[in-house]
Image (cartoon, rainbow, N blue to C red; front, side, top):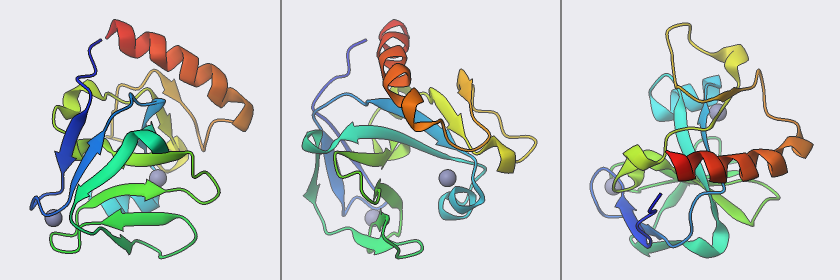
Amino acid sequence: MDWKLPREGSCRCGQVRIRISAPPLVTMACHCTGCQKMSSSAFSLSAAIPAEGFEVISGEPVVGGLHGATKHMFCPHCMSWMFTRPEGMDWFVNLRTTMLDGAADFAPFIETWTAEKLPFAQTGAPHSYETLPPMDAYDGLMKEYAEWAGRA
Ligand SMILES: [Zn+2]
Ligand SMILES: [Zn+2]
């Protein structure tokens, strides 16, 4: 598919704008109770974007969530949860796909933490994990995602 890169996005109020210039490595829905609270919804949606293909082009996102080693970044004005910089994995940014223009192109490929899933929540993701995929599964998942998203 045509990823329409670079592609921009913003928080709810528009003060923070972001741009991606690389396609996602993989897309996800997370059912964990932490994501339920931070997204104020049944699950969170994200896309792993290579760090060099992600930039904040206006505004100054601030740390929110648990303020731990993994940095959850929010708009300081409207408080939208925009992206996460995971601890020890600085080669990608986990971007909340609903911030992007044309978020419909970023359907989730993996769903995680189904052990904590609300019974009515449905994501349509072709791969489900009770917690997280095993580390050695990611290479294969990323290859498969590239094909799956290409066909979509
Ligand atoms: Zn905002
Ligand atoms: Zn989660």
